[in-house]
Length: 212
Image (cartoon, one colour):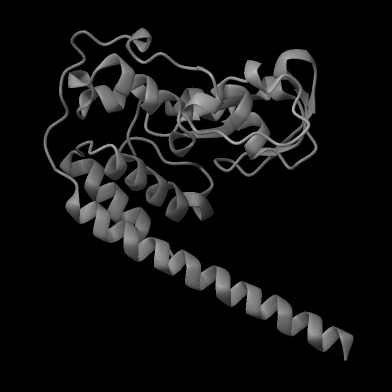
């Protein structure tokens, strides 16, 4: 009897997750259709320094767990490491994350040393520059570079291989993450009203086709 109940609960949860993912994918398709399609802009004038990053976490909407040592010293990178860990992060003074458990969504492997983890700007700063951020104020670019929506803890080598590429040129090697990757990319671009290229839009549409 207990086994039957457990199976029923697991089936119900699985069905709920599939339904949630399907709803998110449908919403992403709608948002994708609303994005402006245009050629990528130039890199003239670009510098990462034009996007002040790793700024104060709480200023940019991060919620830190209770017991965080010196939360006023936490920057957006610290906050992303804490949020994306499995709840076992150990912190030293001044909000420094010294250990934890992170599952890299791009490759699927598990890591325990924060030095193996990068915080990825999901839509890379240079990509944002080419798709509209070049005309923004510094304050708006700082917000883009630090808000929770656009940051994700990933394995450092995969983050390096991604660089500033869009989904037409780079996709996570873990294909099971393609649906989520496309959905998140679209959400970031839609929220910030950034454009997409035609090749980028085609790649995102293909990735959404993998959704449940």
